[in-house]
Length: 254
Image (cartoon, rainbow, N blue to C red):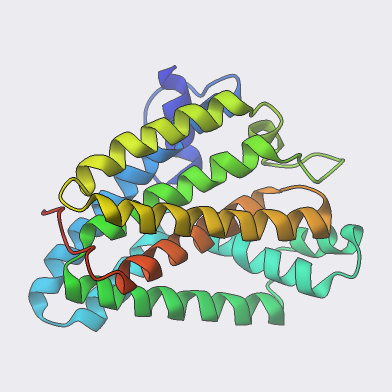
């Protein structure tokens, strides 16, 4: 079972961890929220320490940059690829072909710029509020969204691809276990403000539904790029929702 954690860490982060990879990549999906917790805590620690400089704009920027560095920019790359493919491709085949191109086009560049700007604005507000619980929740829920989509949608590429090993073996059990773990993680973060859970969780689910429905309409399923894009959208939606919700102040101190 721990081999799944090794695979999840190696897949979702830059960390080089000892141990053997799992033979069934889909088993790593159980651990995605745990990896999200690890990433979120690192980002929250960075936010809490740089906030002491009394330069919140820089603190927010460093948190957003840290999220990209810790994940090798994999998810933002997927977001840009999805934007290029979905808005540049006229058919399923052309969309998938564009998404596979390592070069970033105009649609991807514009979408990525908008994403990072909005994430920075939301994070600036969270840093000003000291709402580190929302920061962590966004990162955890972003990984849960990947599991939910991988478990509920088919893989879109008939020829296979990098994420097929994760998607093809995923099912209801992965969604149930990952969702349960996520709730176990979030409850302590918001134990003084339970109503905030009814803001951040729906925000993530709305992002998942939007990306999932769009992806199904455009390419009939998901790819690794789509999962990465859904993760970015969920993180953004949770951070914005948390920043707008006046009760979601910091119950998570570092």
